[in-house]
Length: 103
Image 1: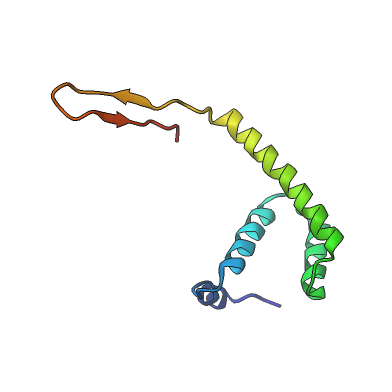
Image 2: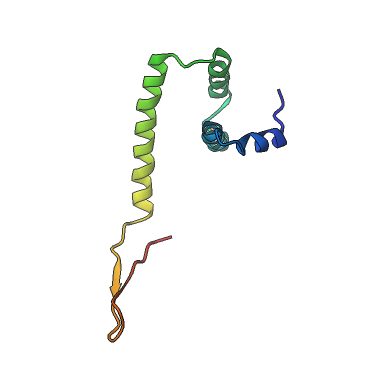
């Protein structure tokens, strides 16, 4: 089944399309990852066709996602070190706090 871009854009404008947006974003990221190959795509198609996710699969997926998020957070902390805000004051004027963050 070919997906219509216009149909998806229209569906994403609906107030109740939050889950659709979340799934499209996750799928977009997954499709850019070479590790998300045809075997995993077939598994996702099977879940959609079945119309439900077995409870043991949902539990295992949540556990794996937690570990994945921790890995991403650890990688982010290595690449973007946390910095303390820089405080700057000018005499004769109200005290202003300047916060600098790494972009």
